[in-house]
Image (cartoon, rainbow, N blue to C red; front, side):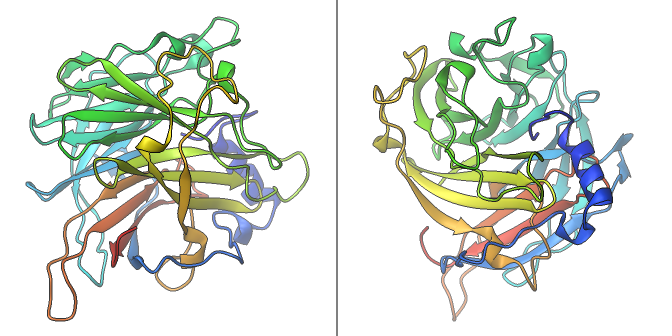
Length: 374
């Protein structure tokens, strides 16, 4: 979920879309952006706004994952009043992304004030991992959980102490800037959990002039539940100014996904009022950064952050096939496209946006094919 200052972004967007040009709300074009030849856009598909399904209003979809064994997708909602995920089919071929088909709404046993932001299947156990940002203003910190396919809570993970919120907000996670990304390692034995922005003691939020403080990416062993290691990732400065000085703008990590055992994709999602969203995909080598797990605060010069490489600025794909960039918070590998006489088998990559239950936004699935290594 995006940060809320002074109002949640869903309210901010409503005001902007009403008071500024609606055409400027929801997407932004970066003239210098170039398409990555390794990413071929297949297409987009959307869900109707405020669709009713399974006794719920579908919206706030903030995490997405795919189980190839079942040909089944799962998407989690950040609705704090009703913690749930949906199962669905997503028709996807080399040339087309079809309309999503919702199958089931699964209620989750959840902690108080959940704000679910990411979900991953565990094929080995048939369970799901999911994270929540909590509600820091009410003293509820971010958390990581494992639940059955039916939603029953199996366990909650013990977190390193630096993730605990402080009563006066002088340290710990900032409100609405907690655990935003979650990725399973290819062997399924470990999981990385990513912060959207820096802990208070680690540095500032990004500005138009300066990158943000380092976000902590923490590696957990799934057998024991213990935190094993940690890396620091520095998000870029806010790439676009809002339409008028003083209006809201932000940037942060919205999802992570493993490329292989050592490399990770990181999605940075930025927003500027009256202008729209910017989505940039980076690649990091996890061996390029120091282990920060034992550090209570991240002081510049005393650790080495992850080196990052820009893979794609998704503004370059706007046009036929991609109508807009929205509040994208999900990144998942999809089905493998079978080989043909013209091309080898290709991985698919699917993104999903969180509409914040806002009529000015959209629940948007976007699919790409990987035509060469990223």
